[in-house]
Image 1 (cartoon, rainbow, N blue to C red):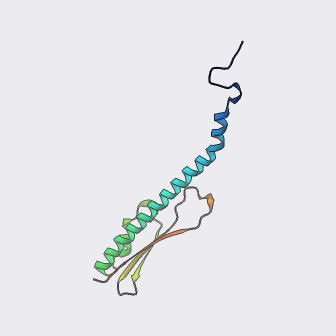
Image 2: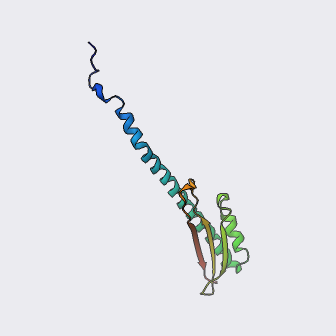
Image 3: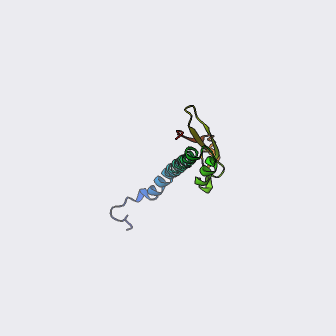
Length: 123
């Protein structure tokens, strides 16, 4: 007599594998969204840091070298960012850094631009 092992029903073989196969796409989607969100937050932080570095130079040297300082503060994966500087409405200076949203899986089609602007009073 060939009986099923204790604690196992002979009819549910492969059930856990089917459950995993059904949930795997969802788990993969969650992982991809988490990676994309992490990269977006890191990019925003780096753009903000670069804009602050440029604004400090603009405040001290009246725009001379502000854009170069902002570019130097950017990591290499954000080298194609757009950096602008100028005089704001309050007789101070601003530095603005913009870059398209870095998306690893670009087939989604998001066309978003991350922009950080820092203003510095004229001291």
